Length: 354
Image 1 (cartoon, rainbow, N blue to C red):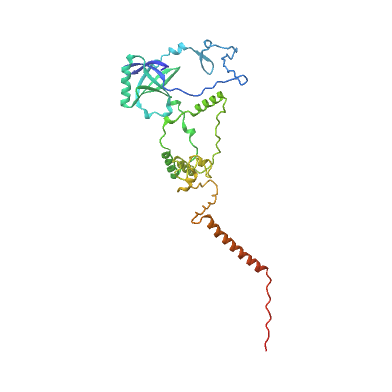
Image 2: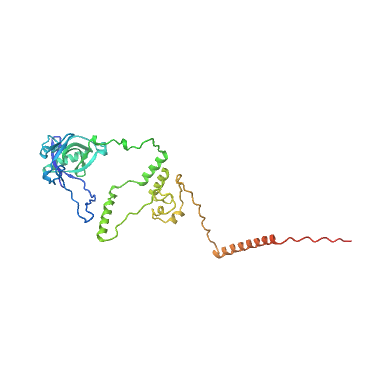
């Protein structure tokens, strides 16, 4: 573990020599700036704004800016500040970890014993914090700043979690929705159902897909292959909140209700059917509950009648029946037409007898 700070962890009259090392690492993708014309790397040079002189590290100092002037402050002056936290993490109290606002959490560090002689008091404090379920509160100075910190037991080590100062937390008032927003009980129940349907999240299953995509892009360019491209999604449809919640619940349950439409899809098959990878014909044959989208503005398409099942003689018998009916209808129509066209016969006059 690379040490970024060393000093003592003061626990009452017990002083534990410790060293601080980062508990996390970053796999953030880093890019270099290049000159597009010849791919040369772009370098930055520090220059003095007064005379334009290019400066080296030994030529650069630091200063505190006041409204009127810059006051130079040297490294030696900072190191000699009368701060008890410069080399000591002084534990001043304890609290429940659940009582700390999560907005205050900053960066985690591992605390490790700095020497074999520190092992016993280190383990003593670790086990005491684990037994009580408490976190120790203290301060220490590092990198020209004083930090508020929690020290807690985590597995076999002591973890130091730096905190933001309480006055560094901004008010959430500006982020809150404006106006009076009303949520119905039905919407809340559906939201609860969706939370239950989605289930518990396992953070171990999450990974950085952006970093993997960039690596795949670079590998493809090195091999002269076609770089992978994003699949373009269609624009989202505006549906009412209840319909969107119900569709989300159906999707989270694996399409067990309503045949499994895609998220945000208003119907009409297509991509919504492919989202589940199932057989559309099998889903349609099963019993399904249909939920109408009140605000979708779509008219339902007339249902198609299923073809009658064939029995006995099959197609030939059906063809004979339909043929005889068609012939009879043609004869009837011909007789009616002939009756209209034929002139009416005059009645013969009666003969007188006698």
